[in-house]
Image 1 (cartoon, rainbow over the protein chains, first blue to last red):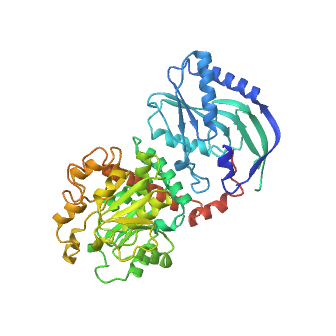
Image 2: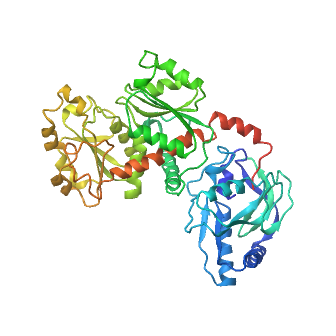
Image 3: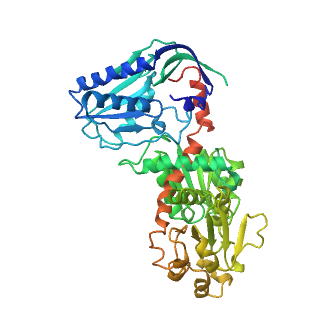
Length: 189
Length: 321
């Protein structure tokens, strides 16, 4: 969840206060590099693979993955973005961000879609994303790549590619960007 | 947002955020399956006390694309015909579990009055000569997508201003977004007083055409011919109709707009309505997305009663990445 979204989302509506830095920019870069290799290995190349970043936090990671995949495999990947706001099971709790654009510049049908997000938590966002995705076509398979898996799943969803497994308390917050991953809390505004 | 009664109730920020939300629903409408589950389980009542085809269909399509249920009636087959009062009709329909009412009525002020009688959200789909806010929103959206923005744009609204709720809503919305508006009409079709309207008025269409960015034509309501406000329709067309000759006077990139239904050959010549810069069909298409944005802004927002209840359940548990 990107900073702006977090700031205007009730009931937190606060600011993120970092306590510890878990990964720095270099760590992130290495993790993405490894995940890129895993994606290629797992899918026997990239012929079938499409990348889609979840708005808003997952999109920079999707672009970073695309860049790493191109360096490893030489194939230039198009990156789709998807906003799941209208598919959530908690509509009304989160703001709908006008800038969170959905754009899928390829046909999903028959392809392997790798969904990319920053942090995997309850799994509800991914559930919504799966619903959204099938409105665009019927992928042959959907895989999930996340920078941070912080646990506390509420749905039977697991990631296929993980940057970092990070045990957390429920009330903690994780801030994951390309510059690093921080663990902290929300403070009231 | 709880209700949408008049564009003049909105501030610029609210108006712009509705237009931004519209953008998202334009994308939804362009998908192979143009439907999202956002308002699943919600019920929208389409209460059209005055006949309407396009607005009603547009709202119905919008509600369905958001997965809301729709119920509706038409006056000819409902108990309004049997003399049921407005209040009773509204409360009866609300008792059936309706979350939002889309109301069209021949009398100005009905939607505002319903707010006091029912808990459901109210969207004004046109009340008398008062307002038609979703029309104004879709017009603003159409202009914005074609011209970038309304800031500093020259807009003329031509025709029967006096009886037009579209004119009232659009003057408020266009000027709020920074356009300057000129009203062009014969004196008999202007309101008795224009005090407080942020507009310029002229009776000479040819004079304004060359500097326009948008030429907005209103429908001549043929049923009003009996009131003898115009000597004849031919005379109206001669002075205020957008004929092929007049269309030539417009700058090449100026837009031609009309809220429909069009009286071809009266306020606009048939072939002018077909010009590429006539965006009348865009207006209709954008109408669905704009109405989705309005329905979603009311029913899908945190201010709504039902989602507030849902929120208090989740506050403790749900957190975020």
